[in-house]
Image 1 (tube, rainbow, N blue to C red):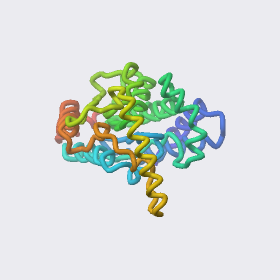
Image 2: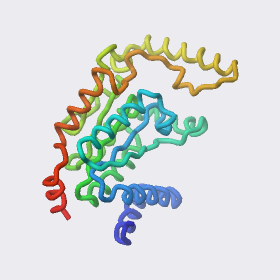
Image 3: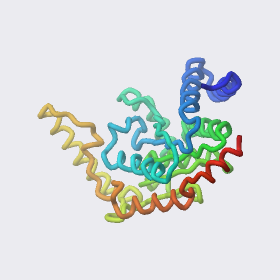
Length: 270
């Protein structure tokens, strides 16, 4: 459990971010929960969902689930202890998405997102108060763009890494790629139209998805709209040749396999 000093520091971070008492309380509770869960862990894997950023992992597309699970499995196989959490940019409802439209537009056209500043503050706090904790964000599509925005807001000098897949073309010119980031823009099978700014492919895919969605509604077997979108190239299943080998190499290059000597060195931090 967090000490009184840690709780006070978390409350101060919340005060700097939010004016609303309820928002400060919600932020502090979430931050302290993540802090408690990550104690004595080597890695925290944070999934930033694609789209509106509101889908729990079990409601994401199968290929997005496979990436998150593959990253955590690779870290575990390297001998490290890890936990996984998700960062939701909005609530999972049509009304919440409508209220978030302005923020989404600002993110799309200007690359600014208030939630990026919030998550960056969380990561900075966790990194400063956990001597051995390394943080790996995983994001696809809009989630990939958001992850990179968080890194830009965070700045340098933190043990925070980002695996970004299928970043939309509008975010590509402004993203930062360095030794803490892995940007995958091709699944190794078919070029990604969202990365290449193939607007026609996007328009036709979403038009077909609308028809497909209506069909499922008509036969009383409703599906989430995202599950009706078929976009060849904008899918990054873990087993694709452009996905698993690159992510495994990135993780194994940045982090050696855990040994007792690694553990001893990490213990010196405290």
